[in-house]
Image (cartoon, rainbow, N blue to C red; front, side, top):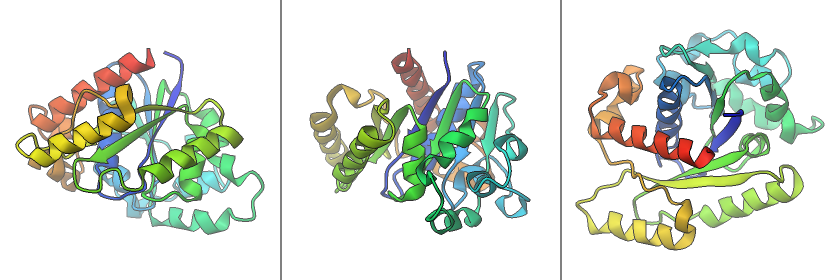
Length: 253
């Protein structure tokens, strides 16, 4: 497999974006692939989910994006020997302002990731369509969109798809949608089934067969600084992300 960069994107918060990025990266790394997880969210939740204290970092992705240091100087190894992370904390929020007058500001992440020696790069994007997310879309080969199985699930997706199209036209013509994954799915409710039907109408074969269930063990894992596979590898959430990873590999060929 040649290197593939996947941006996990949805400008809505609370849709399971970080959970998807972290656990997909972890599962892909167990299959003897070197995986790099890029925490592009100033909340630093992907960093914390891997048990890293984001408040004790001397340098973060913020420093890389601003050109103060190289990617290899901040890369940390997770508990899985094949999984690495570019950590972030609240400092990254300043990048939106600091990069305003910088030349080629939309390509800063792409330039930095040229040094990424990994089979797969997973970018956890912030819940906004600002400059950081644009950087992710410019750097990425594929886009993975988590969609919560709730009312207004499709709200805002039109804007996201329009942004992807604009990036494709102007900055990254090779950008493709890898797929859409339903999260927080409750098969006992009619609503989840209705959302699944509606998303399938809009995205067709781009909708992953695997759905991520609403699962207590999945929700509580980040508070322990663990992935779902470390927290409870037999849970429904762990099994679902294992299946999702298999689908992702199939789609990447």
